[in-house]
Length: 327
Image (tube, rainbow, N blue to C red; front, side):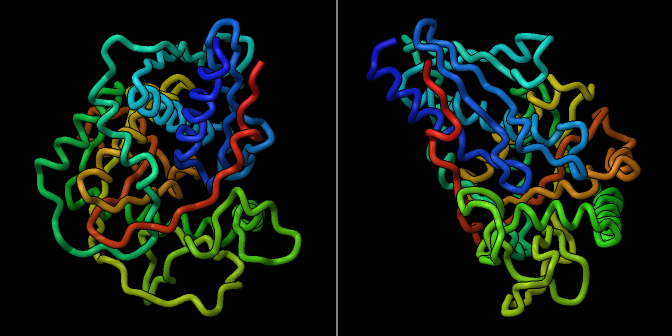
C-alpha cells in the first residue's frame, strides 16, 4: 500500500470515529496492515462498562456503527470496504477485517449518506409533536433491512410500554450507586479529576433538564452538578422505533450497529433529529419487555427516538493517532 493510500485510510478512520457509542466511550481500535491493505477493527477492552454493558453488547453496537461509517467514507472516496465479521474465533476483541480497494464503480447508495456522517449528532432536546410521514419511516425500515436487521415502529400501546420501561430504568439507575458512578465517569463538566475532554459526554451536550415528569432523553447529570441548566417540557408522546435482530450473538450486535448507523444517517438526511434510549436495554430484567410481542423481531438491540427538533451538540473525538495503528 502506497503512502498516499495510508493517508486516505487515516481519513477514513477519522470519519469512522464519528459514530455514536455508549456514553461516547469510542470503544474501537483500527490496525492497518500496509502489506495486505487489510484494516482490522478491534474492540478496546479498556473502554468497557462492566455495570451498564457487562456482555459488551453496547461495545459491539458502537464498533458496528463505526464500521458502517467506514464503509460510507470509503464509497465517498471511490473505494470499497468489504468487511469480514469476527474473523478469528479465538480473539473475541477482533471484530472485523476490512479489505480496502479502489473501486471501479463506487457504491452510490453508501456514498449518498456521506454528508450525514458529520451532521449527525444525538439530540437530547424536546422534539415537536409533528408526525413523521409514513414514507420516511418506511425508508428507515428499508435501511435497516439492508443490514439484515429490522426497524419497527410500535403501536401506541407498545410505545407506552416502552416509555414505562424507560421510567423504570431511571428508577433502577437512581438506586444503583455503581451505575451512577459509571455514568459519572464518562461525563465531562469541568470538575477536577475527570477523564480527558476528547471522550465522554460534555455538559453542553446534556440538553435541558426535564420539567415535571420523566424525560425520553437520558439525563447524564447524575450528580446534579449543572445547577444552571435550563428546564424544558419534552413531548408527551415520543415517536420511537425499535431496532432488532433475529438472534442475539456478537455477530448480530455488529450487524445491528451497522444498521443503527445506516438508519441514523438516513434520518439525518431526511431532516429528523435523533436520540438513543438504551436505558431499558441495560437491565436484563427490563430488556425482554421492550420487544413487541406482535413483532417478528427476536431481540431489541436499540430504542430510537425520532422527530423534528434541534440538532444535538457535537461530542468530542479522540485524535486519530490514538485509535489507528499503521504497520
